[in-house]
Picture 1 (cartoon, one colour):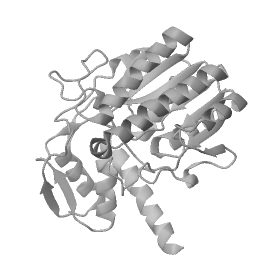
Picture 2: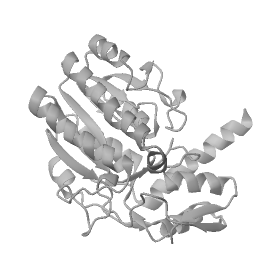
Picture 3: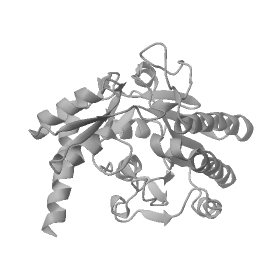
Length: 314
């Protein structure tokens, strides 16, 4: 198949590109390499076509009309809750207007389907746990709002234009290539600080919980969605809740270093608790998370350690 992966130079997108290429698909990566987004040119494998372009750019239409993708994997986004809360207009511009630009281009190019990276942030503060696809969406951050809005646009484009979709609502994804210097991804941020033997900041009381899912497991869901999940939405998580304090203790175990901790107030837009019941994904996509948190952390730590070693050698 011909597949466009927007955000394909980023943390999650680049791993998906690797998997699609390994399966023999023809892939084009579109990425703006935004400094806060984690997109890196070196994440794209040799031989894969790369277009340095923002999804809001009119040139997207030309790229799609020339390549004529069967599938669009839409992972380009303003993905930081903190940045979105500070600048809701920018958040909406990238996540909504950018998405509409991609959807219109996909329709004109005759694409069959969009696989969309949505988020647990669309749920906000939820009354009943665990969360599944039927749980009410009451996002408390601009980022969560824009992800929810774009889900509705996908339904409109399917009804009005016949463009199929599969929505994957991710838990907190972590793993190799995540930016340890960014504002999103507590595991990557902590690991970066631990490697530098620096202290870490824990917001709120550290007892806020998330569903942490390893990037390799997320990739498998994206591969499954190529041929399954027509017009459906799935929560993609490990099905377990883990607090920030537990993450800290696990990284201490993995690294053998006890980083000093400073505490800070709750971040605007931060939800208290989210974890998933991914039974529908198992039933319909044949997918479930395979990598335990401690194993995923070890893999991520080894990646960062090797990257640091390589940088020091050069």
